[in-house]
Length: 290
Image (cartoon, rainbow, N blue to C red; front, side, top):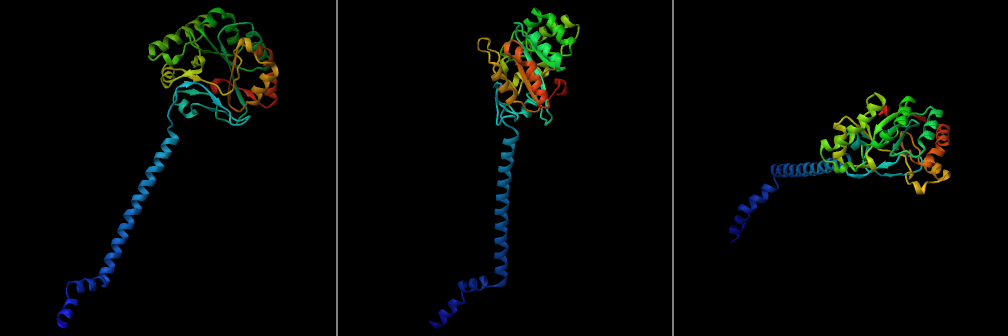
């Protein structure tokens, strides 16, 4: 029995025990452990890299949103944030402000019809030698050719605001889109003898990715705005103090300013407004700078 037990200790179990204590076994286990750790590290790093790549993609390729142009102002005097980013817009040759620290403003006026304020606006611009772009609807060109001629003569630009002022998102094909822009170009050519600048302001500020693409494909740059106030409601015109407070408080470098030629308030305050902007150190640029 004693011999058998002694022999039993020298059986397979005993041999395995000796192998586990051997230097070769320890070396093998060490290599295996390193392999497992390296595999786990590679897997973790791969997962982390994929996560970072996804997060970066989400940051740099945001989803394009269709709708009506809108702004949020983080702080007074700072550039506002549009509901579509500058990068997204620029892919379609569209802009809402110039990314600059220079004190420069780009004056634009939407012209839907005439009610006696455009002459006052032109007089103020002439006094300050301030260039502007007037985005005109088709009926404005047919009704006020003499004012269009004066705009051009005094160094301003006339842009395209469409023939009938529709929601351009509803025009899904190129032919329908072209039918809203080409008649305005033709009227301008008949009035001035010149070709119209390929600057487009979407009626009502509505847009879609498709409408921006169609405008770009027709050779147009689309211009939204980064500085405006509610000046288009004829029966609810803001007073002088309210208008100046809103416009001056939201002024920022590189702003595209939107004003309406129909506004009695704009006709009354523009001279003072331009003076205040000049006192703040601003110059007035043209959309050609884009």
